[in-house]
Length: 470
Ligand code: BES
Ligand code: MN
Ligand code: MN
Image (cartoon, rainbow, N blue to C red; front, side, top):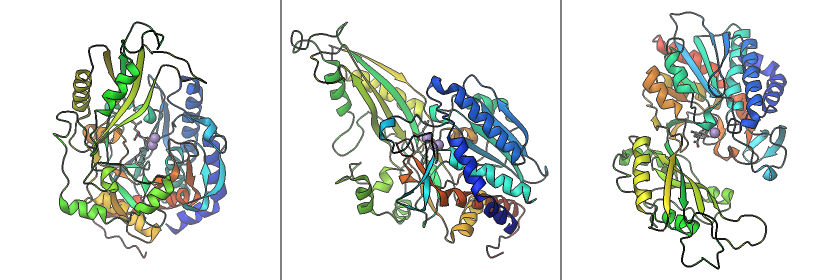
């Protein structure tokens, strides 16, 4: 493995430049205006996979954006790892809040990153983290150090709910056959405290529409008599949560798997500085479910949040209007055992029941996803843990995350394999926000750690012991 690290060191600048090139293509999956760029990005990923030693590289067409696949098979008797990642990115809006253009990557100094960080949309989520795997493969093939079979599946629709991936996996079950899935699309606690993500929350996402009169009205002439959908919507939304942070949808918590006292204790042993947390976010206090710590509120507890709300007049100055319609996008993060479809149904029924007679309510479900948990008593977890210990010099802490990667539960249900979430980003990297960035150190730490995962996984699978000092 020393040769692999030497190769990475010798090609450091190129590895960086290539990622910057990839970040220059605006692969925004949500906006049809970028469809051409999304396709271009898929082709660029395919090209780099080929250059890294992948065979059978394909840009698979779907009804939406393409899925890039490839493989490096060394011996059918050896274990197979499927690498999953996404090359699509979130929209850059609000663009005016970026300090530098989102698709013109620059390297700058920033808190938490001693060696500086790459600023660009997708730098961390997930182009940068996905590309670590491409470069790790290159370093392994060029130094003849590929310990097991490696397959790649890099999609372009993760940020819009992976709508075409389920069908693709079902259709290509055989070709995707593997022993474990490896994903780098999550974070570590800090560059000094490595961690492995052992859980993801599920998601139920709905859009609601409240309508009143058949047209916008003068708020003086009609105001006071006719329902104002924006007022009503605000009322309905505020009744969804109590002051104690509990969600008031009947039966919402029925299936929530309570975490044992011991687990909660272990979870709260992870380093977490509430003062630094508040300081970094410039808030005076947090505001979560009573009886739970911030670490718990953002991992083992479900939440309900309005992601956007609109209607009426939002232009310059004042316009007196009683809007005909009001809208909101609402997400519910779910925890193990909660079923997204069931939760969406519970929400819909309850939300409709809240509507006063003067309005009509429509609820439209968007994509959802199931929660996921990774056990820590498996060979694959042990391999990831040892790999990180090797490169960080400290054993990583298992930690559940609040984010969602719905596809992970599909790997379990369809391919019948577990997923290792070995991410290298930081929670403060501003993914989905203006000024998203990814630490240079994180990028290279990822590239160095991944080959050890393959080595240790292969060794442990064949019953060998791993010697970290070797
Ligand atoms: N990579 C993120 C999920 C994530 C981020 C997990 C940080 C853990 C830590 C992923 O790209 C994402 O943004 N997922 C969406 C859900 C998806 C259905 C759009 C999310 O969590 O909001
Ligand atoms: Mn992601
Ligand atoms: Mn994302």
